[in-house]
Amino acid sequence: MKLIIQIPCFNEAETLEVTLNDLPKHIDGIDEIEYLIIDDGSHDNTAEVAKKWGVHYVVRFRRNKGLAKGFMAGLDACLKNGADIIVNTDADNQYCGADIETLVRPILDKKAHIVIGERPIDDTEHFTPLKKKLQHFGSWVVRKASKTTIPDAPSGFRAYSREAAMRINVINDYTYTLETIVQSGREKMAVMSVPIRTNPELRESRLFHSMWGYIKKSMLTIVRTYLMYRPLYFFFMLGSILALVGVGFFVRYFVFFCSGEGGGHLQSLILASTLLIVGFQTIVVGLLGDVISANRKILQDVQYHVRKMDYSRQECEDEKSSDLVKNESGLSE
Image (cartoon, rainbow, N blue to C red; front, top):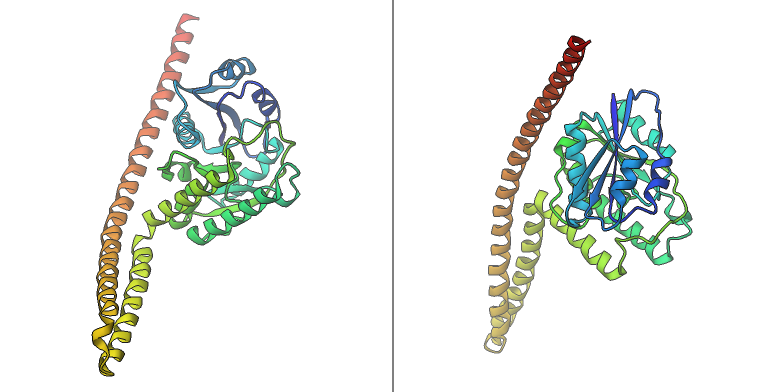
């Protein structure tokens, strides 16, 4: 059983070594632990710090592509290098490295595909009261959208089984945390949460440039992801509401018409007709979205099988290369 711990990094030369030193070197049930960083276009010597420390793999972008792209590049690299379990953590040492064993245990015990660390948000001193409320509210929205019970959706401290990692897709460029939970919940993956500890803050969060910006981007991510998986329900409900309001205005006009005052209330008839038409068109959009969603599921399944074949072939080639090196060294001796 091979575990690879991946760390997305952007200008983390000052904090990376602290994070790496905190990572576990041995976990019961894990035969091999390796480390991978994603250098997301850093301008400092993040990659050099990682190499000097002894990190096994370094994925480098020439320019900054964002947390979501870095996360997906890390998953791809981990899978290609034979990871059975992948743990994602932050480079600012926000999470306690010793809790990685707590994260991977449900996967080792075959109880979950994805495990997400639940931070003690209310007890975290460097979280402002507003940030705590936003964290709780965002997690509640994600729970409703994903039909999961995850109490700390923005947490980036999480573990994925190999099977789950091959099924993950991230479309937005902002963050992977919310979208992957909605996707996993809608795909009926076994997702669970475990309590974890946090360390004192080494630097300010880079996702929270402004509260309004964070709320806007997070809500857009949740809505967009939800629409990808349940477009018919969303547009059917919206269209039905519009149509019902239209019916209400039509009934209002009909009452005035029966009392002989219909001529002065043509606005109600026009508004009723408009709402009924818009409501019907909205439901049609939902039907089209449902067809697209079904096609997306087929494409995701195809992508999963392609990934499975690609990573299996990569592993076979690596094994052959390893055997060849052993044979050549044996001959030279």
